[in-house]
Image (tube, rainbow, N blue to C red; front, side, top):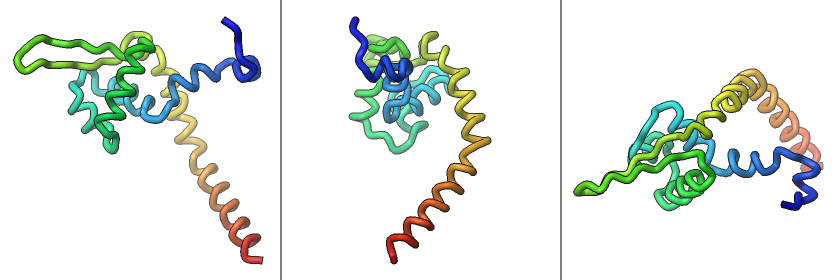
Length: 125
C-alpha cells in the first residue's frame, strides 16, 4: 500500500481518522465504561446522537474491528454492542487524554478567552 504524503508527514493520521471521528470516541468510551449495551441504551448514554448517525458509526466501528455486534434471533430480535479487545486496547490512550484534559483544558480556555478579547479589540478599531 502506498502511503500518502499526509501519512508520511504524520504517521498517526490514519489512527486519528479512525478513533477521533465525530462520535467515535463517545461510543467507545461508553461501551468501555458500561459494557454490553443495546442500541437504545447506548443512544441514551451518549446523549445528542441521532439514530442514523449512531447506526453509521457503529457499522464503521464494527468494520474497523473496534466494536462487536451480536444479533439474537428472538422475537422481537435483539442486538447488543460491546467494545472488542482491539477497541479496549485504546483505553490507555483515552485515560491519557482524560489526564491531559484535566491538566490542560483550563489553560486552553484561558488562551481562547485571551485570543477572543484581542480579536474583539482589534476588530473594533
